[in-house]
Image (cartoon, rainbow, N blue to C red):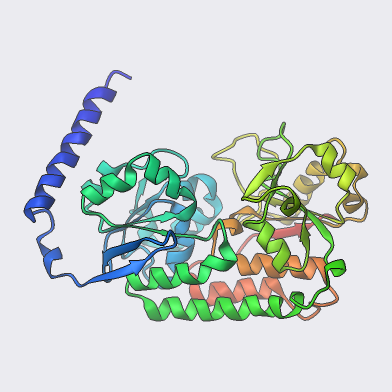
Length: 386
């Protein structure tokens, strides 16, 4: 690494100069006339930010799933950069935007906080007026000094959440984005639609008795690391989705947080009624993985081959869920997207087909694209073992 030291010196020099300019009020003379508003983010912090930011950075690229619905025609207009985790961990989706939204080809990609070190110097160089981060990375951003350094550089940061408590935090997160991007009407339109779709499930599953909720084992990123089994969801994220859909999430009995590691023998002993596995195209981030590559470029036959491969792992053939073909693979990236109501509808219809006979999750997903997204719906996002 012969050039690392001078490169770091240059970066620090850029930050130092930027801080001096900001102190003197010379870095962005136009900002003095900006209308500033105070908002409360999902970390409970009060943040002063420009109303209608124009150069926001999404510290995690997959937060674009949320901001795109605020401006379907020009989704990159108010973004200075997005995290590089979107093309890395969800290449199918990124390819759709590259093919259908010309501005996607010129947007700047920055190191995402999720996968590597977010650069404060880069944010300063891009003249960012806001950094948007996931609540799950609050501790990391604080402990690494990123929050303090951004504050010193005069760049506000807000945290939103579609990952830890998505069903609880999706609405306030979308409304917050609507305020800082000054797209309140669009945010409210999405929130109204989100609420309508969630109530179609909740109004039914809320009346279920405990003995009407079957045990569901939800495996996180099944096959991502072929030699490792298994990671399951706790109360958070897909654990919430299973409960909202009328199931009893197995991991909630053992993990209070987002997830935990499970001994495969434990799964066999518990013998859950349903087996759920999340999957996506991780060919760029984890070459050689054996997951079910669900998403915009997924093909039904290939997905069936992949789901059959996963239930052939040692011990799985003995599970009642496999014998009765109560096995589903579902798109992993729903786990940090405001579109998760589509996943919950798919799970509800899978677990309680008699109670959701008239529900069509695929039609809901199509309607979501028609109303809010500039890309067509292609591929498959869930599939059952046949």
